[in-house]
Length: 619
Image (tube, rainbow, N blue to C red; front, side, top):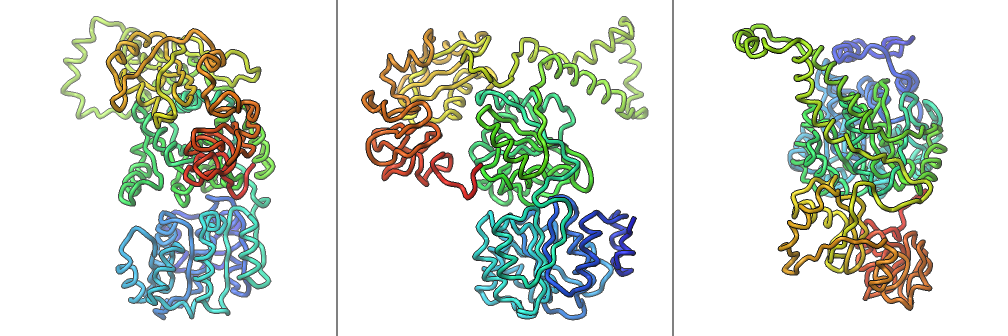
C-alpha cells in the first residue's frame, strides 16, 4: 500500500498531515497526487463525493506554490460557502509548517472589504465561490493574471446552481498558460463543455465508473402512500435510535414543514434552507456538527458542500428532479471510507425514478418494508439496554445519594427495579405503537380509508388560500392535536376532506364549534360518503382532472387530459383542471398539472411546486 511519502509529498507537508491523523492515501489521492505533482497537463478527476478530493488537489497545490511570493498563484472555485470554508481550512492545515503561506476564503454572507484586505496582504491561494469572486473582480480589487493553477471543485454542482457565466468571467481573467484541474462527482454534459472550452488535452483520472455511487453505501427504498410519508419518516428514525442523518426535501417550504413537525413531535432535528439568514444557517450547522441535533432537514442547494463525518443515514423524503443530485445526496454519508445508508421514501408512481437512478449510479436498490410498531419497540428496548450498560458511572458524584436511593428501592426485587427503570423510557414507544397500522404502499389500489380514522368534511379549500400543510396546521393547532392524529387530506377548491384518529374525533369537533378562519366560521362534519360521491354532490369543484364547471370535465380526466378551454391546458401529470381565471390549472400552480397560462396555471413560474415547470433533466 502506498503512503503519502511514496506519492512524493515533501517533509513539511507530511508532518502537517500526520498531525491531522492522515495515514494512508485514499484511492483518488493515490491516483491524482503523483499526476498533479508532475505539473504538465490539465486534469479531469472524477470521484464520488466524500472520497478525499480536497486533499487530492490541496496537497499538490501546497507543494507546487511559491510561498515566498505574495502573488495569487492558484484559485480554487467551489459552489457553496460551507465547502469554501472547509477547503480553506484543509489547505491551511496542509501548509501550517510553511512560512509565509496565506490561503484566503472568499464567499458571500461575509464582509467583502475584509476579504479584499486579506487578498491585498498577499494570498497565494484564493478559495472562492463564483458569485463573490466576480464581485471582487468587478471592483478591480484582485489580479488573477499570474494564476498558474485553477481548480474547479464540485464542477457539476456549480453548473447546476447556475454559475456558468460567473465561471466564464473568472477563468477569462486568468493566465492562458495555467493548468486547470477539474474535480467532479459526475461527468454531466456541462462538465464536458467546461473541459472542451477551458482545458487543453486534459487527462482523466477516475475512481470507479462515471457517476457511480460509493461502494460502501447501501441503497434502500420504502413504498408508502403519499399521505403516510411523514409517518414513515418517523418510523425510520425510531427504528434507528442512533441515527445521525440528513433528510433531503425538494423545496424550502417542505423542508421547514418537515423540520417543524419533527421538532413538535419530540425529535432532535432542525433545518437548513435558502430562506434562513447566514447567521441562522451557521447556528444550525454548528449544532449539527457538534451532534446536538441528530437529524438535519435540508434542500439540495443548502446541503451542498456540507462535509460532516459519521453521517449514518441520508433520507430522500422527496426524490430529486435530477438523477445526478441523488449521487450528491447519498455522498453525504459513507465519507472517508466509512459505510452508510441512503433511503428513499416513495409512492408507487416513483418506482420508475428509482430504476432510473439505479442505472445512473450503477447500484441496485433494496426494497424494504416500513418497520412495524412491534419491531420498533423491540429495537428501542435493546438500544436502551445497551445505553444503560455502556453508561459510565460517576462513583464520586453519585455516592452521597446512594443510601437514600437504596432505601427507597429496598422493597423491590432486582427484577422489579430493572422493569421499572426500563419502562420509564420504553413506555412512550409502547403506547404510541401499540395500535399502529402497516404503512406499506397500496399496490392494489384498494380502500382509500385508513383503519382507525374517521373521514371528515371541512369548509376550507384552495380558494381560501390554504394548501395541505396549512390545513394540517389549522387542524392540529385549533384542536391541539399531534400531526399523527390527522390522516389523508383531499384538498378541493371550496372545501376539503381529511381523516382524523377516531380517539381524537370528539376533541376535534368540540374545538372547532366556535373556530373561525379569517373571520369566517369553519364548518366541520363527519363524511359518510367516499370522496367521489361527495364530488358529485358538490359539483366536482376539485381541480383534479377537470375544469371548474361540469361541462369542462370531458377535457380533463383523472390523469390530466387537456384541462379546460383556452389558456394552458397542457398534458400535466395531475390533470389540467381550471380555476376561475384560466383553464391551465389552479391559480398559483399547486400540484396540479397543465402548461403555462396567462394568469397562473400549473406551468406558472410563480410556483416552484408546479408540475408544469420544466427542470433541466427530468426522470
